[in-house]
Length: 313
Image (spheres, rainbow, N blue to C red):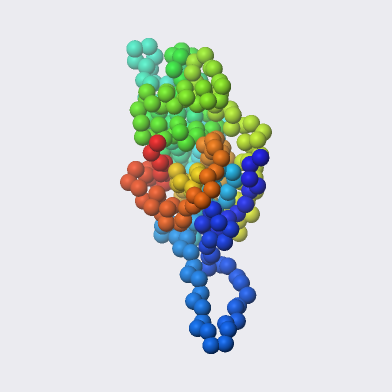
């Protein structure tokens, strides 16, 4: 059975490895003649101007670090891909057929009155082949743009031109391949995951792997994490998460507003849980400076709506 969910201190492998400026304790009376003891130095939870981290929330081998806005947030109301497709205000279509078929791009049209935000790693299904979006992008109202994708299905090149949203963000291993590796390596990773889960889809698609995120044990874990995040005193300022697997920071995602983050929270948590594929190793720790260093990597992707950093494989 996985370890019970707990909100930990910043040194996550220890029960009392850190403190914050909000900690309250009874004053200690010094011994006669003893020099006064220095007060513990507050943990630096800053991440960037106007952003701070909160203490990690652990569940099994996964830890998530909430990121909250301490300054003004964007007042732009972004539409997400899943909501836009569900409301029939967004369409995602193939580009070309036959010899003109383009495997590495799709056409996205935003017919709504809101800017549309699409995120690297979102799964779209049907079309001629199932795909994963390969870039973070803002699509303004009334605009149609081409968006980079990677294919996650090898054995099909027919069907309809229209895509549907699966409502799933792919797990870390596939996101890493999409961002940092080639199309061949994306297919290879999908094939490895199908074998690992004992799945044998005829077209070697990722779709059946994505559906595992809805298993009862995974939805129960997601619900626990959602409840823990909801209990944060500054939940209304929550704009992102850092993902930590086995003590290693593997992704940081933050958004322009708590509203946009809230619309994507379930997808993010589902992907994080799917990425936790082993037992934790005792003694592995991480600190706020690890998250800051990871977020400063030059491979991060930035839009007006988002910041995304994903570890290399």
